[in-house]
Structures are given as C-alpha cells and as structure tokens.
Length: 116
Image 1 (spheres, rainbow, N blue to C red):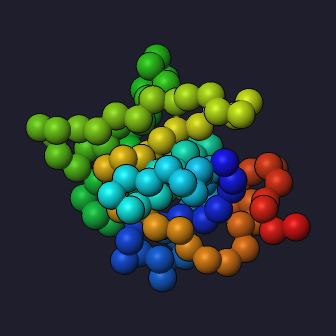
Image 2 (cartoon, rainbow, N blue to C red):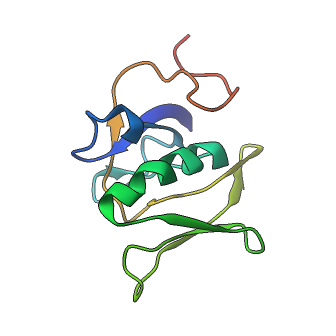
C-alpha cells in the first residue's frame, strides 16, 4: 500500500478534486484505482461534490459516509482500519478513480508521502 493522489476521471484538472489516498496499486476495479481516504480528506471531497448534485453525509453512530446522489440507491462507505490508520473507501469499487501524477505531499495529513 502507498500514498498517492487520485481524482475522479475527467476531474484531474480541478485542484479541489485531487485527493490524497492510500492505495494498493495492484488492487483495481475495472481498471480504476480503489482508494482509501482519511476523514479530513473525505470532508474536503464533500465540499465540491455538491457541484455534481451529490453529497457525503457522515453518520457518527455507524462511522459511515453515505452519498445522496441517488436517494433510491445510496452508497455507504464505512470506516476501516488499515496499517494502523482509520480510512474510508469512498467510491472504492464503484467510482472511476484515477491516479494523478505529481507530488503526493500531505494535503490534510501528517503521514509521510512516497516522494523521498
């Protein structure tokens, strides 16, 4: 697993849509990245999702973020622990995440980057 930057396909040119994520480069869904995000990064993501008539609502009781794009088929993403970190698999296995080249310096975290 490694830290990298990802964006939803076709949104790579929008800086607010590029997010720091923890991924296994070998783990893909239909060729797309399967990222895991720290909570502050998910909250940063939620700030622009409204531009696409979507949002991420957090339920503290279940530690889950849920999308509101399709009220008849909401997607929920529960927090999980990986390598000693608590992460959220937002869109992992359903959204078209692509790796964005460039420095993977921390956007919201104090975790080390892979840019040594």
